[in-house]
Image (cartoon, rainbow, N blue to C red; front, side, top):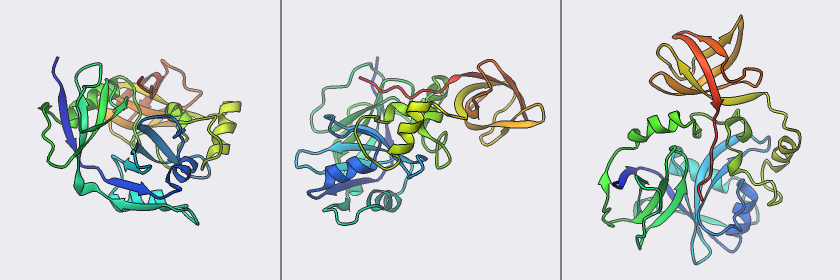
Length: 270
């Protein structure tokens, strides 16, 4: 088996200051007391998804933050949104790093001088890579688009395509990124209530269509709209639908019948 590496253009911010970890712990869904880099969600006070980022802890107490779907200014605004009297500063280090996704084998490579974070976001064993500018990648160069089919086939949700500002993490199968034991953080009360009561009205499911799928297409049952297509690859996709629509339900879309599959899941690696 070969290693494949796809370059990606993502912002890289460094969060510094004596309150850096305490502040980040109060803003994101993951417990940053765990060692190593982590993928995390950022929620609003109503528990809806604002962003998904990766946090890399540094030996000096600072943190590197990357995000695949926000620009550098937008990511900086997100990180600093609730700084009041905290000793926290953010600097843009995007130009100092080259970033990408590595996949092709089941275990992480033993390579010095780079940062790796295991990510299940593509449905295969993969790692987000941060390497200093000028570091020569020793792997076969590929394209992230080559992973798109595998992600859909495995029913792996991504932010913001499948889950965004109108969605709870649990609706999209992203609850593996939510800590229910770390204590207070933005959106934590809503997360705790959902965890205790399980009161969800929608769920993200895999779908199979007989015709062409398009993102944003409404899904109809009888004379009622019960869902919406989110991500697509060919005749497969992911759709947010009513929890009343079970696996195997056939819904109507403009391109033809659509059959619901199992719920989407984001399963952390390791």
